[in-house]
Length: 453
Ligand SMILES: Cc1cc2nc3c(=O)[nH]c(=O)nc-3n(C[C@H](O)[C@H](O)[C@H](O)COP(=O)(O)OP(=O)(O)OC[C@H]3O[C@@H](n4cnc5c(N)ncnc54)[C@H](O)[C@@H]3O)c2cc1C
Image 1: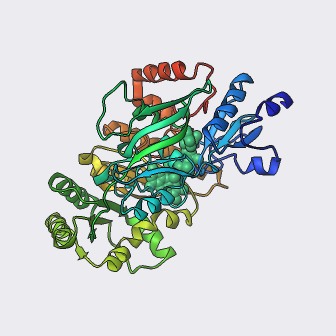
Image 2: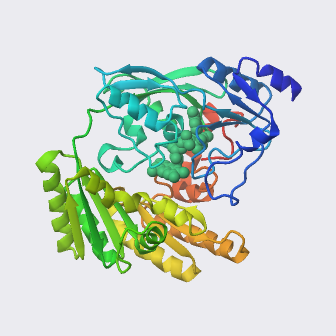
Image 3: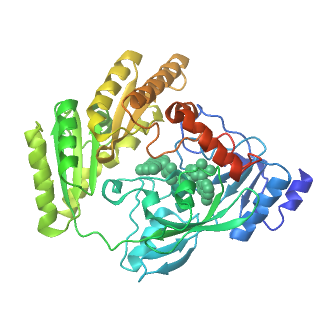
């Protein structure tokens, strides 16, 4: 251990204070349900060279490396392993370059998503990926989980905004992947491979991202439905005919939780609230949400409200933004992020209601209707062993239902520790191909072992 610590010379800030180490044990996934070890050391490098020094020392002493951004992950991906090195990117926060004419930025991995947004705005540009955690999650964490967000229904997920990466591999080599150009097909698409790899293939030390011209002003719709079936048909109709900038939903249980936390005057009899935003600008934006409102009404919406006033639009969307915090206030939460093909959304929502009834658990569902990516959130009492067992059973049943519907076990939060069994079920024989890639890039299995694949 002593030799390992002295080999970390040149790796940046090295922390061994037990109280500080304890604060790096876990991310925000299902507290108490997932293993979280105690790291031997936390290093906080500022440069790629310091990351390389840390990874080389870890490789020499066969110490597992757990990369960590803001620790806002919801799958246990950044949970520590006993005796590991946690490599925190919290000091790698620079915008290295912002090339406005080329619509790109190069940033260090610890930069918080919102800070990149501000830097882009200062140049009259826009960074589109907007996870709900954008105020605190990092670009490195967003890349490692391929984070999604509210506007990815129109603008894509983190991978769609990525042009290039610098990555420190398990043997300490730093390699540049990808490019600065809009198009490019030289070599395998290793940027896409690394994006979403949850720290298991290497450490992202720099990301080159594409920026967009700013989206024009927007218009907003809120629509309520008395049944899941009506809402599901409306979603199917909308997504076949137009691409809104946002298309989100929340169910009856979530609506009730929001009303308990911050009363908005929401109707308790409503089964689903659907929210859409258009950013086509001016009259075109209002026209798009009016057309969406018309389709909702034809599919049985009990009420539709549209506006092109920004403040009013924010008020309409406020309930959706409060969804997760409201459910968190009801008890411990086990948050899921399953994704199904668009046409299967009603079957998923109805199935979740059946599972809640069968397992006698409270499940609030909200999510990204336009992507078929849902967040059924199981609320349970962590001090009641029977409630914990039922919560786990409901979670497994939702995952199984998703696979039956041709869906994916994780739409945006990643596999981490939470979805490892589910991943095996989804990948089938292709799991071996994933493992072969892992062995090729990390033969000693030191990069975030036991997570992801
Ligand atoms: C309130 C709330 C709302 C959220 N909303 C969304 C949402 O809308 N969409 C969404 O997708 N997620 C959401 N999340 C989940 C989480 O914020 C995202 O997964 C985010 O991308 C994690 O970023 P982070 O910096 O916190 O990474 P961490 O949690 O620290 O790490 C996440 C994973 O990335 C790895 N990692 C981190 N940095 C690096 C790096 N530099 N190189 C290699 N691997 C690395 C870690 O090892 C871990 O496996 C939400 C979380 C919360 C708490």
